Image (cartoon, rainbow, N blue to C red; front, side, top):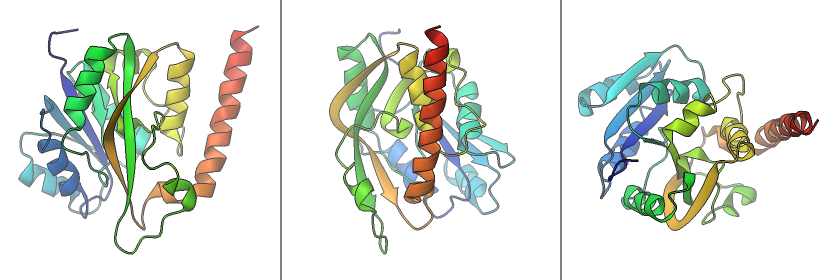
Amino acid sequence: MSETPTISAIVPAHNGAAFIMDALQSIRAQLHPVDELIVVDDGSTDATADLVSRFEPTAKLIRQPQSGPARARNAGAREASCEWLAFLDHDDIWPPERTGALLAGIAASQWAGLICGRVCIEAMPGTILDPRLCSASGSHVPLLINSTLLRRSVWLALGGMDETVKRGEDGEFYLRLVESGVGVAKIDATTLIWRQHGDNRSRDVEPENIAMLSILRAAIVRRRGMNR
């Protein structure tokens, strides 16, 4: 690892024109700046790509047909050149101290391949939160990749996210990461403001639960195969 770890910020976006400037501004507002910003426009039909080109001309903009968040994140990670990967969905934001806190976590836990902070869940105007989501606010949710900092070498070794998984792709990736023995460290700082609004996929709690059950079954099958 270099003396000062380098960080690539990756923002997958699909029809995110209403939110993406907030996300990008939160990255630029980091008290410790990231080294690289990559935006993956996943087949948007609105002004997402135009906004990025106009207001973030130094960002690397990748355009692809709509393929889902797993493939968008993989595309961004392939283009990244830094040691660590930081992800942010187009409708969420980072608190200003996020990057500095995670870098301190790297220094304190050099054995770790993933550093995880706390998640703050914020309801946007007119949104009623599911109580099950409310209970997660303020806690560590390491399977939520947007709250973490991840070694790029770990991402590559695991083959990135499974692009066949359409829901719960972060959870599926996290389970494989843990199974592989990668160290996970937690820091006592908020690293993601997870904003909830009417269009969040994550607000559909029941489909997410069904997807996670499928992912857990696959993990059990993998472990049985390893123990034979």
